Length: 177
Length: 313
Ligand code: SF4
Ligand code: SF4
Image (cartoon, rainbow over all chains, first blue to last red):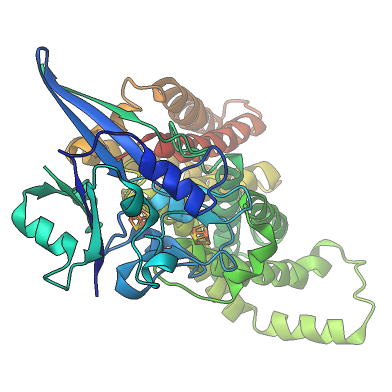
């Protein structure tokens, strides 16, 4: 099993609903976020291209955060989901420094927190909160090992890019372009 | 010109807009560890070279600072932790891939070793020292008998400790400035140079002082070589590392680095030590203080600048 997410940058309008849904679902402390919107404008005026990306932890297949964690609090669970066990985390910050995407943050309670792909919902057969709420249906979540999953089909149909692959992380967010 | 503007709605404290997860605590931890490594390395090596009674400052006096530095360093590391109650979790696992893990274990091994080392010499330094209990004398005798083994273990562990202070940072490929393997040898050299400097300040023996002044000069030369090498490596590397190097070549860390670390912390004390060796009257405390200052600054600047260096989008 290999969980992954595809994000359709052509459909995303940057409304931030995914951010709010995550904050509510996961009781993210005020002022913090586990997912966020990046808006890029590129090109030379007047030929400008706008792109919206809903970003979060890439659940890297080669995760530096897991490698650097001294206690094993950061670990890889079923389906390649990268998680933090709060009771094992000493809050040393090594994983935060090791993430090229800055996808982690120090929770005010001391441990380090990040996107979990809403594994608690996924185990019950539901979708992650961000995927459920997205009004343009631009997020696709599922198992890459299953050729019929939403995410597998989207990746087959469309062109995509992954971010900062040069950092050697083998990220599992696929941005459809 | 092709331009890309990125607007991100994220503002996580300590992560945005620039990473600032590590502050003075880690910088101090690296400095204290490096200096302790230098002191213990020279102490055990000089002992193995049979200099126990010639280089008394090196073998017997200077190591007294090591346990203090190590405990202070561990204290700083502890302060840096955000989930302090779970500190003990560091010592319920060994994760070889995580420098933070094996570094914490190295400290756990070398701190007691350094205390034992000092204890076996305490009656040489304070002849009136009384261990009070018979079994303490027995323990002392045991370790004095095996001092040579102890010294070998300490040479080995102090070198690991010195290198570790650099590798802790170089393991993070997300921060291009840290992600260079030369940081290990550079921090080791810098710790040795600080150790030699402290010995120079402590000793009253002319031969010992001259010897370690010379050693210090050589190490500073090696350090400068490493620094040049580091920048050559960066500039010949990928865009992210070129940009990391720019922090020191025109960017915001240019002046602090070249003035505090290289000029005041290395070149000036090297020149003073050289002149002093040539017979000029220069109080050794001046170059020694400058070297220690440069050492601290190197740690601070690399820890802070590294967090400002990042991958492009
Ligand atoms: S994106 Fe960052 S936090 Fe997520 S798995 Fe990769 S390195 Fe770890
Ligand atoms: S902060 Fe917690 S999860 Fe991160 S590396 Fe340290 S112990 Fe592991």
